[in-house]
Length: 442
Image (cartoon, rainbow, N blue to C red; front, top):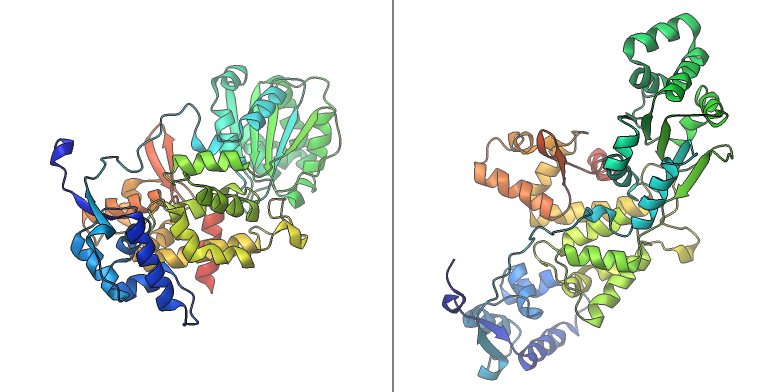
């Protein structure tokens, strides 16, 4: 890499020059009845969208010729005192953060400690409830990876219950084994199968995670019989962790229920800073506070918004994003309307979250059409897939295009890298997959 003093200089507007340009833009649009946004300003200036935003907010260096073109597009002349020539700073974007906890656990430290404590006491069932996209699955995955729990419960079993075919038999097959579960069910019926599972959990230290248990399924037989038998047990060597959108279990000293709240503003600010979104000024922090209040700290909603802000054409510029899309918050339902956004919801995806996701996907199709196509194809796979699986979906494009497109989705936080023993895999959040599926049906 060349030394800093060899870096090519570029032009940057001075405060007076930026004020002059902003006044010219405002004057140009003041008699027009259209909403001013970065796209319209870029079209009038005849410049790329990201270049326009970078100039308006002093975000990027450019050439003197480009500044002249921008000024001329709004009938003003660039003068020498309107800009200065500076050398660029060499700071890599999207550098990997060095941290002890994954970003997804930021703001959840107290919740993690509470669940961990309950699982290691005389509490048989820990139920973690929250709306779709609130981070239940991520927290559970982090919990079961901790060495302290693995030492106490050498056998960890996860049963995914979101599929239509999933029922109590799916749990029995995982706990008892396929052959024993089938034999017990055929010989003695479902009640005997539930009793056999309870007996296995009483005799062996197992951490059983029932993932995405629906409130309706939890109230059917033999689940109700299963809960009663477990909670009535005087001794239980195993523990159950249940994630669900709504907790509805019989009260018991052996049961601990925790509703996952929205993230705090401080936690969101930390996440946005880690995602390379600048929050240096009071105006930037005010915008973030409004976004946080509107979505009541909902982790997935705020992550989807952050993915747009940190990527093309904004590259971390919250104020530029706010200028273009802040008006959308005016038509988003809030708690003031009597409907809490962050509370558990009965339908798979809340309407407001569906709308937010659709808007982001529509803008992705405009700014990065190849990435939008790849996301639509990749979302059909319910399981995280190695990079080559994503590349296979773009077989007609070059290897460089394939890698760049997948990287773009990762930078936009639309695909999530998952570390496994076999290497890194990339998946789409289940809620986002559902939003894409719903959008494709229309």
